[in-house]
Length: 259
Image (tube, rainbow, N blue to C red; front, side):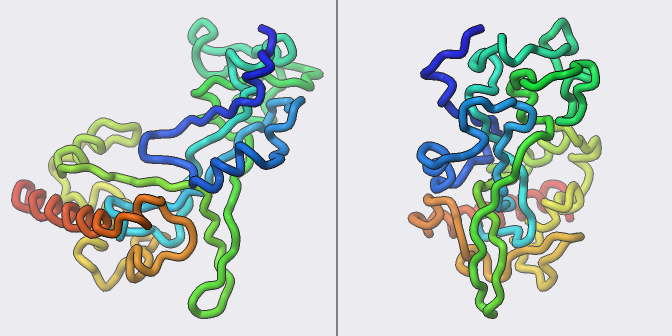
């Protein structure tokens, strides 16, 4: 398929609904000279991945030292049905050519053993640039912290994790999603995952806001430095309302399922 001039400058984004790039990064992607978006990309490792700040269940529950690696961004010249398939010859795929890449045809950036002498690599389907490695995670600037040290805030995206309106919805997610918990409706909410354990500690204002390798930002959103969702900055009343709502969700869950 011939590449369309008006499409090869487009940018494709794949993400879950609770993941998004910062506004500044989106503006930069539209106007800055980004190497991955220059013409002639070989499409071997074309992805740009956000370095994403995590808000766990509430804007006041900021995971201070964790960075997610979604959403993902890709130049139109490397996207299936947009880029030039004559230049970027397709590799083999499962399920009659509609599924994931077959081993030897690009399951990793170094896995092209069955495509010898390849210099321009296959176009990427949405499943590819969501699930496969092959790109660069872009971080934000270093900022000086309150104690005078320089801290890598590394934020080019946000993840609003487990923002549900009922405990039933939270439990149903953990019952049915990719890393499912068959005991999701029998186990205390804070024991279903480290993420939820952090969220429960946050809502209860626990004196030990750390779970495993991750800890909460002391002081919550008010002490946050660096990028934050624009809505949070302009609607402080929402931050308070959502945090109180989450506390009520936990109280309701305790009444229904016990601690």
